[in-house]
Amino acid sequence: MKPHWLITLSLTLLLAMACSKDDEATEENPDSGEPAAPPAENTEPTTPPEPENTETNSEPSTTSTNATNSFPIPNPTANLPVGKQRDWTYGTGQPADLDRAYLNQAVTVLTNAFGLPASTQAQGQYGIWFYDQMKVDYMGTNYSKINVIIQQGRVMRLTIDPRSAALSDGSGDPDAPPPAP
Image 1 (tube, one colour):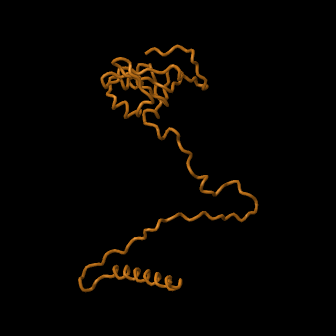
Image 2 (cartoon, rainbow, N blue to C red):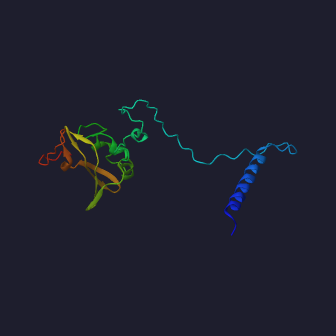
Image 3 (tube, one colour):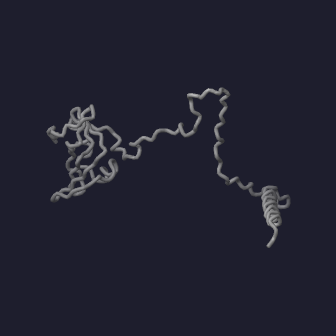
């Protein structure tokens, strides 16, 4: 078995030779008149320097220099489809109302806006798609679930699930009559 210092010396020489070949490759070749290849880039990952504590006062500081406190608070709706992030109105008669905006649209338009439904149900020749995590205002009450009736690949009707009602103070009224379509 070879001594440890001999292996270390051999590896050091191999590394030095490899580095010297990189230096030779960056010099111009005077015979050919062409510039040599550019030097190899450093492929080591760069890490930001650690923040230094420059505090000279021995009293505890009320501000933190810890980098973990500077991360933004994640937005829970950021991963939702764009249609679920929007505040919708229902039943006001405007073209931008939820019950009118997607009427007679292809189901692909609906899935592009709201994603796939939370669940589905077949009802004869119709399909009912159930969406949750919605923000729909109907007559001052916020609803979080909608039902979409599908026929032959098109949206036939959108209704609000009355069980998902929440008044502005956060309390729901499950005994309230369902909204008129």
